[in-house]
Length: 255
Image 1 (spheres, rainbow, N blue to C red):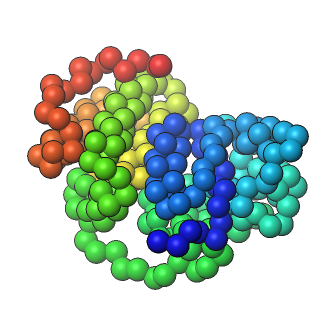
Image 2 (cartoon, rainbow, N blue to C red; image 1 turned 60 degrees about the horizontal axis):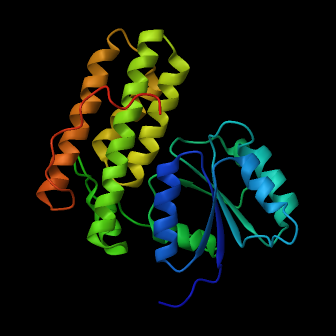
């Protein structure tokens, strides 16, 4: 495949799993990828002496600290007009919050969409077929074509481990009555699940983020754990993951 017109991409996301996945997929497409875990870290990196501006910046819209249109303005001031600044989010974003960005992608997105936007082109219109209840086959096939089986297994294992930890954090938030933390963890599960095609997890996490803590959050937490197990079972059947005992609940903690 010919090299992309844009070579250096800076990915800005506070979620480690999302950063790792985007790095894998973009590197596979031939880009040189650099990473930052926050808007402040991205700006500090770009302001280093003799640090050349990237060809594009791909940034999450919902991060602590500097984010959204404020981050877009600061990135533009550092990178200049040549760089493309693209926003990504697992939630819908109001139009006025996208001021300063050259484009927006809703997670999960197709890599062909991203490559087109990085090149300044309109993504080709596609038709979304009926989604599988547990695993989005289009996302799964894309990942399978992008990386070796062992690497793909490591990616899904990381996703499941991270999701279980965040579910435990949601349980702790429910015990404290902390609705903000509940929504924050649900939002992150929604985004990372969508990136790997874990459709069932993504859909429930989106509902829990939007609805907040209900009268019986314990039952919702149990559903999340069950959906993790169902996803894991499918991946074991496909030889993506080795058959192992389920991760004990409660071990995740707030690492």
